[in-house]
Length: 179
Image (cartoon, rainbow, N blue to C red):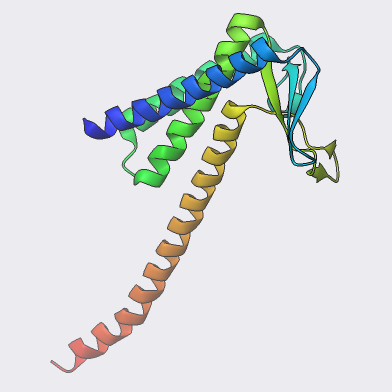
């Protein structure tokens, strides 16, 4: 029960932080304006994203609402009912759920997602300037990275265990021959 409460607190904390930061930006920064907080490193630039992550698939609100709902419900059912893995997996799923809910609230309430975090020092070869994003996007990204790390770690552990068992198998067989 304590684990469930901790995970719910993480999810609610992410949603709360996301919505609070978006509210502050909407209240204090005119649309499409920018505030340079750390020169050439971190700007707050208020934009409206009517697409998916990083502005792709613009004006497809209902598609995102349907897929987001399915993803959030599916991840929640898995996390709270079936997830037997360790804390890294559980926190990663909580990050994905919290971030998904944060952006879904915007889509339902406004028809777009409020984005405001800009990292002008990041330039991507294909996209050029790195897209403006928000707190929810950050948690989704970190959650995906955490899942990838957990999966890679588990694959490495399994391979090491297989090698260890393979090395011990001949020793056991040779030990049985002498009896």
